[in-house]
Every structure is written in C-alpha cells, then in structure tokens.
Image 1: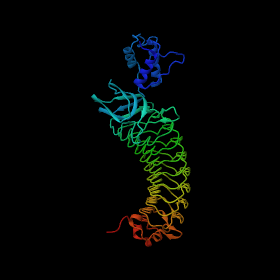
Image 2: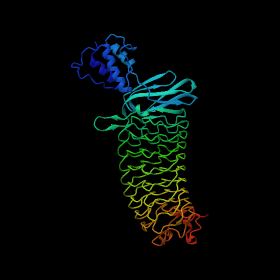
Image 3: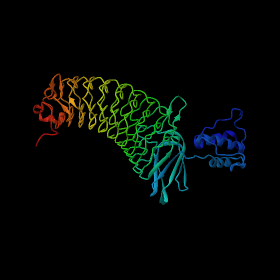
Image 4: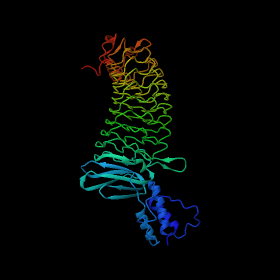
Length: 503
C-alpha cells in the first residue's frame, strides 16, 4: 500500500516540489487513499501555478484508483500540470523553432501545434531544444515550469531565443517561469536574461509590463545584458515597472546594452526604471543601455540614476544614451550627483554621443564629484555630435581633474558641437599638469565647433600646443579641425589641425 510519506517523496523527487505535511498528521507512514493523493497533488499544482486544477466532487480525477505504487505514479504524472506563463507567437513562415536553456527544474513547452514537451532537468548545463512543424505557419508557443536552480557562470543565459528570426510577439511573464529563488538564508538565486531576445529582428509590439514579474531582490552580474539588443521592431514605451522587483546594490554589466539599437521604442525613459538599485556603480553597469534608441523622446529623467552613489567604475556610463537622437531638453544637472571619487577608465565615454536633440547649456556641476588624476578615455566623445547644445562650455566642468595626461582623456569630447558659443574657458583644463603627452589626449576635442570664438584652449594663459610642443598626430590630431575662426589659428601647429600628416 502507498503511504502518505511516499506520495510526498514522489512529488519532490519528480518535480522538486516540497508539499508541507498537515500539522495534525502524527504518522506520515499512514496508508494513503486517493483523496489524499488528490489533496497533495492539488497543493503541488498551487505551488507550480498558483491555482488548483482538481475538483474532488465531480472532477475527472475523482475516481478512486487502487492505492498501490503504480497507480500513485500514474496519477501524479497525469495530475501535476504545468500551465504556461509566457508565450511567443511565431512568424507566419515558421517550420522550426528552437531555444536554449540552462536551468534546473521541471518545465513544459506547448509548441502550439498540439504537441507538448515536459522537460525535467537535474543540472544547469546549456541545452538547445527544437521542434519541427509539419506545416509552416504561425504558432503560439507556451512556456511554464518550476525552476529549482540556475547556472552561476556570469556568461550563461538562463533562457535564450537570441538570433531567432521566427519570434514575432511575446506575451506574459518570463519571470514567472524563471523566477527568483529564495534560498531560505536571506539570499536569493537569480536568472540571467543575457541575450534572451538578442537579434530577434522580426519581434514586434510592446515589451510586456509583466515580463519580469516574479523577479525580485539583489541583481546579479550581466543580469539583463543584451536582453533586447537589435530588436529594432519593438515599439511602444519601456514599461515603468519592468525591473520594479529588483532592489539592492549595482552589479557589473547588469544593464549592459539592454535596449541597445531598439530604434522602434518610443516615449520617455521612465524615471523610476532603476529606482531600487542603490550603491556604488560597478564596471559597465549602464554600458550602452539605451544606445541607438533613436525613437525615445522627452527629457532624460533627473532621478534616473539617483541610487548610484560612490566612486566611479570603469565604463559605468559608457555610451548610455549614445545615438538617442530623439531625446530632448537639457541634461539634468543632478544626473550623476551621487558619483564621487577618482576618475575611472571610460567612465563617461560617449555618454551623450550624437544626442542631437538635447538642448540648453552643459550643467556646470555635471561631473563635480569626480576628483583625481585623469583616466584613460574618461570623457572621450562625451558630448560629441550634440549639435543642439548651446551656450558656453562651463569653466568648472572638469574642475576636479588634476594630474598628468592620460590616453584619450578628452578625445572628441566636444566634437561637432556646433551650437556651443563663446570662448574656450581659460580654466577648463586647469588641473592638467605638464606631464608627457599621452596618446589621443586632445584628439578632435573641439573638432568642427564653429561657434566657439577667441583663442584656442590654454592652461594658465599658455596654449596647449606650447605646453606639449612635441605632441604627435596620435596625441592631438584634429583637435581644432576647420576652426578657422580662432584668433590664433595661424599659430596652431598642423598636428593639432588635421587628422593625419599631409603626404
């Protein structure tokens, strides 16, 4: 005869579901009848799907099977059902569909043609699953499951449809299938949506606001890296609560290229998109996050990175808004107010590059918290191509930078900012000391800034080209390209005015 304990152990062994015993039960080895089996299975289904699927009164499973081992196994196989929580609608010419998964647990795929596949995984190795359709067409594929573990490799993807040209629409919640796992010790295990939809060029429609429901707590490295990169067919606004469950300290690469080149997205960037992420930035935290999202409009929210507080990290805002030509209004003065500390390599490289719709003056205290010796590429291309910016360059913009030159430290910083006016401030680079020239240190810094007047850049009244008379084309090429209006144009060495030596 089958006892109560056997049923609980069977459910846990087959699906990793721990069904709690009734507190009133004194002997777990007492013989079980079919009604108890149904009760245990009902609870298992609630854990899986959040609702019961059996009816003890007149349901199809109310028949009393013989209470032996074979009947119990057969009954649980047919009773425990995984309902879909996330759906993909394919393009109309789909004859084959595949995806890759690296997670432990029990999962179900409804291929949309009447075929269903149960996947039971005891490890987290990456495995590709595919399905061939007898007739090419449009199919709605459903995904469900109970996850029990994730691959901890920072380059792994929990679920990946990347490069799949057959993905036309997504619905529901992927986070309800691959949810946050409470480890019971105050920590959680997280999925990693690295490249999940990367390169799905036929994916249309909006990003579901519920897509990452079920995800909560501390983020992990590369958690949303490249998630939607190159999904140019996506439209609509970025849901405000898309990452609402995440809270904790920043992690490296957590939003690296998340929406990169999603040129069809529209509307404003939600102010509270990263509201609960608080702490010291990590390297590449927001690398290229919105880069190439030319359809985004409105102002950059002043509190978008309000939780970022601490020393700069390498590439932390590298290219964050690069190519967002639809963004408008002024750059918020408090956008990076919490960033305080020594410069890091590429920390603001290309942060606003080619944001041609931005207007107003550059805030004087935008980088006020950054204090210390120059770092490689720290402000390279920061405002390059921002033709809509107006007014004078703030004299104290780089006030905290003090030390010998670093490679590419101001390469193309203001390149093609044709709307900037006034003279180059006398003290703009006042903290740069006369150490040896560094490669690319002032390359194309003011390239084609035709609105700037007066003399070329100086430190303590001495032109840069006199402080570094031996600078080569690699160091200063095109710093003042075509800026004939400068009063000392005739005195500026050729190395500072052209891209390369004349043949």
